[in-house]
Length: 75
Image (cartoon, rainbow, N blue to C red; front, side, top):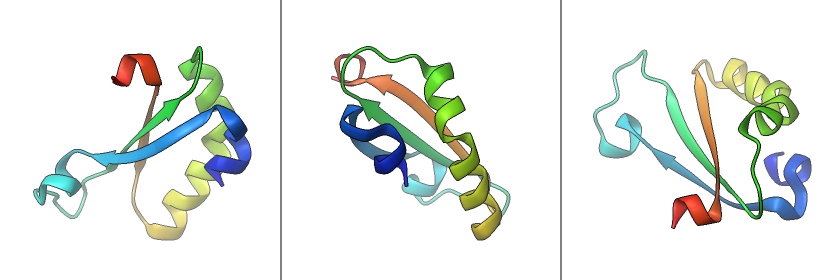
């Protein structure tokens, strides 16, 4: 879904945080880093993806917390 919404600008999606470290509690969120090509407006990215993220959160009964950044910021 993210690939469809963000198109060619999407570089990669990575998990980070307590779930990756194996330290998650039952109420822990899922931290997702969304790396984008080119200039990134995090607020615009969140606006474009919020419906899908909310749907996935409800389907899996977990809060998904996305962070958007450019490939340059990531590297």
